[in-house]
Length: 337
Image (cartoon, rainbow, N blue to C red; front, side, top):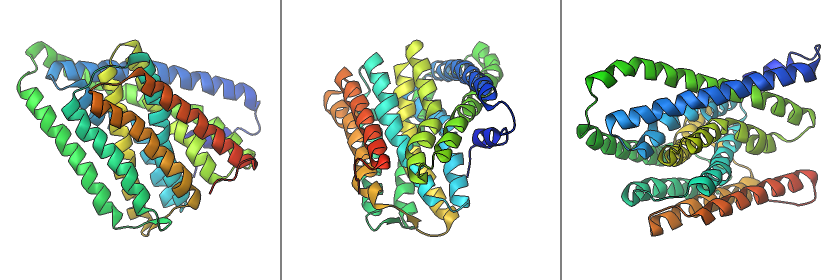
């Protein structure tokens, strides 16, 4: 199973690969930067035009768009029998989203949240990470877990729909803004495409190099691919920081994480047709780190009703420690699991 970008890189073995790599990297960077601008601008306009809170827009429409890479990679991995890669990608993306991307967001723009709305969604995120770990203790994710994780996903979506419906009833789109809908929708689609394809190009070279160095599939899933498929969330967050749209950024991360844990893995289990195998290292290391990251992001915020800058620094510290442990484990310096 490979990214489109990785396939492209591997097919260029007879060309000056370094030069081609630089060109593709620059093209991918341009796609991501411009796509991020269009994407955030369109989503922000939609929130303002309808009156729906930006956190809700970020947690639904934006999250579904930015989780497309995770969904595509995990589903393709499951179809090709690489269940471990599917799990590593989904859980690794949640860890990267929370520790690195939310960490950057909170250091730059910590602030108040709607405690009632965040408590439910943050609680669902933490519950998803814990449940996934408990359901996998037998070193496999059973097919019937689809029901439990799917129930959390439905609860999340229904709560967003109810919240969005209440808000939109109080703020109708006027005639002038209605004329803008097709244009904004086009830019949202183009922005999504720019981010997704840009991420594919950027991560393709990293994945190919990692495999060339004989790094294990599990490590590739939890690092190169997980970070690569999290690029849309990272771009959205950085663009939102620049435009001072903190609600859109945090909503996107929380929503994307819940989708990763409660929709993508159940879909992979259904495609695979049997329980998804889980490695011992996932249970004793990767999943606990994911739970720790979610707890740092969620629990203090529910208690205080706002994000604190120290949460951002703590999440970034967890990310650095996590990456260091993965590298040390891969090189044999540290034995995990």
